[in-house]
Image (cartoon, rainbow, N blue to C red; front, side):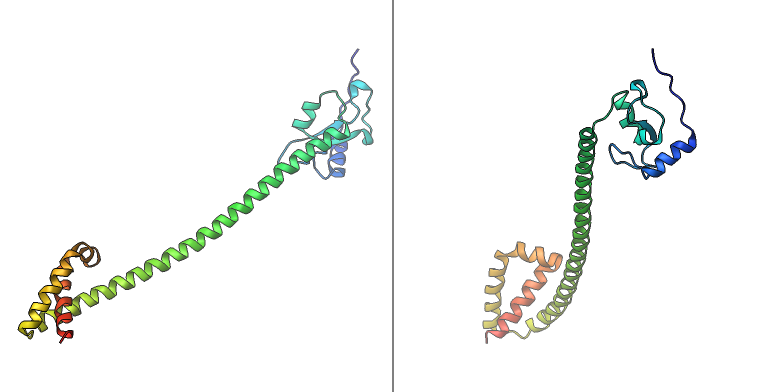
Length: 189
């Protein structure tokens, strides 16, 4: 014949929860993360009473899985150890994510700095294209016959690398080639 269970008062439940710091004594999880129950250490079906010392705070999962069996100390310790391992793994993952975010921030700063350097170099190149083109066009009329021949040799050599010039100077590549060749021819005097 089944033993009739007496309902626990809200006050008794609250005092048990308070004593156990609102923490499941089997797995270590806390309210409000979980729903708490008052569990009988010695099950009512096996003669357990509603005395304060026979009651313990447990979560719904631990209490329903236990049924009318008494949990041994080793079961509770095993569950707590498993929970601690999970918590340690979560902590490690959170630390890895924090480090990853820090590295992403550094990478963003490096990218921005590199983009600024590239922009500055492009601006210098544009400025040089303008100066070299103007100077080359102006100075070309002053070239001697020997300098003109030298310029043509230089341009011929540069045309072999025309793809590189196009990559660096775009549509102004040809102007830059001729202007640079003009300057180089004048310096070889």
